[in-house]
Length: 465
Image: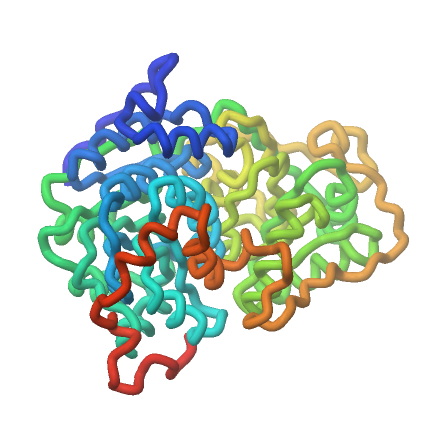
C-alpha cells in the first residue's frame, strides 16, 4: 500500500466549479447550502474525475460522501444505463448509511439527469426489483442485499465503470469482506475503484492490494487524531447512580446520542429515560427496518432529542447537530471510541464526548483513551451535581413518564404522502416525470433490450434479506 499523503486544507476561495464539477451541479449544491468543498473533497475530486483509483482516509464528518459521490456522478453523466445494469455502485456497511448517501446525492444526480437508488435489507425486495428494472445509474447497496439481487438475476454488474467502498474497515469488522470481494469479482476488471476507510490496515490493506490499481492516496488526518472542536471527559460514577446520571444527562437541551453495548441494554436505557420523562429513541439491529428509519428520522428532525444505540446501528448515523455523545457503556477498543465520538463535532462544529465509568472499569477505560491518542482526566459526578451540569448541560428530569416514540410506519408499498424524500425505492420512478431531469432519458430507454430483472428465469421476486 502507498504511504499516506496528508492533504492540506482546501485553499481559501476554492470552489466546486474550480475542481471540475459542472455548473449545473454546483448550482444544485448551492441550493442545498453547500458552497465550498471540505479538504477531503478538494483533494479527491480532481483525481476521481481523471479516472484514477483513489484511496481515502478521513475522519467521520469530513465530507467523504460528496468526495466520492459527486465525481462519480460526473463520470457517469452523458449516457443512460440499461435497465438492470447500473454503471456506478457504492457499497456501504449499513442500511442507514445507504439511505443517507442516496439523499445527499439525489439533487446533484438530478441536476445531470441521472438516477440514484439504494438496495438494502429489511425492506421488500420486490419493490427494489421494480426500481432496478426501470434503470438506475448509481446504485448504493449493502453487500448482503446486493448479493441477493445478483443471485436472483435482478441486477448485473457487467456495465459498472466506477465502484466505491465506503467505511471499508467497518465492513471488515462486520465480516462482509467475502461478499464484497465476490461483488468486486463480478465487475469489469478495468473499472475505476475508490475506497474510503478510517483505517487502512489488515483486511482493508489486502482489499486495496487486490483490487485498486496504482491508487492515489489522500488523508486529511491521522486515524487517532483528536478533533480540535471536540472535548472529552471521563465521568466517574457509582454503579447505583449510573442510570440516574444518564437520566439527568438525557434531560439536557440539545441533540444527544447515547451508546450502549447490547440490544437489551439499549431497550433498557430507553425505557429508563421514558420513565424519567425523556423522549428517547432506541436503535439496534434487532429492530425492523421501518422502525429504524422512523427512529432515525425522528432524531434527525429533533422530535426525539435523545437516541440510544448500539455501535453497529450507529455506524450509519450521519446527523448534523449532535452536540453530546455519551458512552453509557464504555467501548472495548480505541477505534470504537473514535467511531462513536465521530458522531459529534462534525464539519467544524463543536461537541462533547463523555464516558460513564464505574470503579471496576477505570483502569481499562483510561488505557483505552490513551491508546486512542487522548489525554482525558476523570471527574467524579453524582446526579444533580453542578459539575455534571457544567460538563454536559444535565438537568433534573421531570419524572413524568412519557410513552415511547411511535415508530410504526405505513406498509412499505404505500408510502406516506409527502414523504418522498424518504422513499428510496419509489423515488427513482418519479424522476421520469417532466421537470425532474428524467423526461429526456425515458425515450432513450424505449426499445432497449430487457435487463436482468426482465429475464424469463423466474427468479426476480424470490427471497428476502
